Length: 169
Image (cartoon, helix red, strand yellow):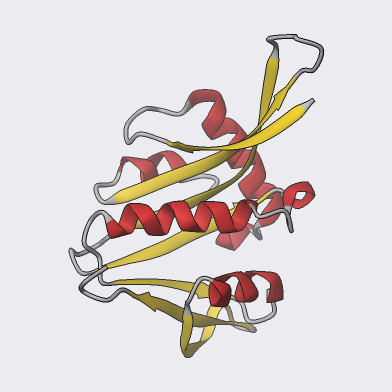
């Protein structure tokens, strides 16, 4: 049995159907209610200058079978409010797929999309206690810009991080 990871870009105004339902389930499970976009995913996806990529683990049956199944493993949402910068607004990976490169693959796919728009900087916010997320962002070149106090709630701060691109990239 062979497995492969596939990146899929959700097209704006496509509705999303079952894919969106599964993403909302993941969102509700991973994020606290006040940080969740579960109730507003469809509206977020309809906005101009918003991109959304999800990953699927393709599981191909062995023994010459042509059957295959897939499971959504995670997603990344990003936006580019101006022609100069973009923001990663959500990055989530199902718990059972963490530590297997899914988050890195999603983030790289979002960065690649942003680069096609001649973006000069990508920013994001991350809870300093989310060490695996911090390590991933640093691995891909993001740097801490500042600490934003009470970003998530009155007792939870965030680091604002950024990744700059050279004009020749």
